[in-house]
Length: 415
Length: 85
Image (cartoon, rainbow over the protein chains, first blue to last red):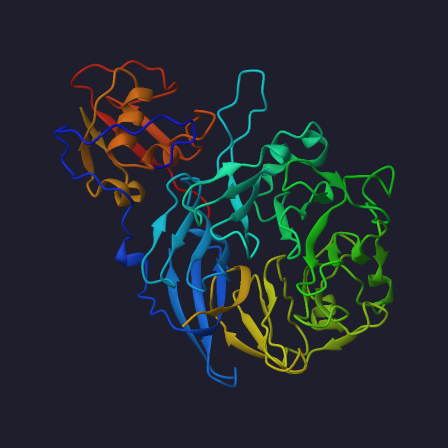
């Protein structure tokens, strides 16, 4: 039951209702295609109008499309729990009816809405007047913490579930931090998310579940060593050229923060002001985007890391000049890859349109799989999903007509 | 009293009209949530504000405050005003 102010549910009673009581909203079959759970690789695609699952053949060349799931609902982020390979969560907005989380525990066959979606506590008259507008980001918790998930919202709230996404509570150490008003931009909601400033890129150190990072688009990167109880900025060396002090302690616009899964001291971020890399325990980021071709620049939204090599990453540059078109520079889309930690970059565009293709890829809409060679994927605001089965060398469009793509995750369903 | 439910919320109620009780609009919405868990949060956010595209009418008059009192026999309509593309 969605009851954020904690009003207890009454026991069943004969109320003379004209419709029977239900424990959870049923699905409208008109809005949902049958999903047949299957083991193996899949792409989970969240869009402005629902979610889809793409599955490949063994060579990752022929792809099938299943869906829609929750057609008409905003699906900001569609994730699989890697700890069981079966539980799926969707960070959603039910049309104009507000934010929620949808959940399946059987690989997508059956779905249920969270009983208590992320919501701030009811504010006191003098308190912060906050309401979750969008559930934007989902991160499964540490491998040793079954059932734990984190959600980032707009405005910039952090929420935690300990029951696989069924119920959510605020992480007070972030939401009530004395500096929250400096780190967040709660009045920025007229820019409809995913524009504006959501909380995103929640990263859990695989060596220590208490060690976390997160990002906001109006504060930058933050680190917690105490499971979210306290936070501090981690923005040394990162530019914020839209502020009077171009290198402030906070206020940076991180678009996407990535932590290498096998070498978690290696962090990358695609920022509003370029591409950066940081090796902990270092505190000062290096702008590796300075090594991108000058006519391409280093502006973009997503960044994805090689699953095994911490020096290899992919970005999708977009035009950040003039009034910021945020489309492929010159209308010639290319993914750029570094294999030396950002010292050099190479464009990868074989199979992509050669001209007049003004693509935009949002911050969650690029992913890699764990195969060898690595599969690289991205989705565009005009509803294409592109795939490479060879480390990004060559590309094909595997879903040409989906709605505006918000997110892509490459996952492995369990058998 | 009878409450008219908009199409996007019928996934919760299974019906376009349901019965619920309350001496105010707020109490009525809480009763609806007890009957159909999750429904209230789709109508009212955690600040107890009606969501921007949701309207509640009592006897065809628009509700401006959740504290508005209700009487036996009032006709309540919950409507959703869609916008955007």
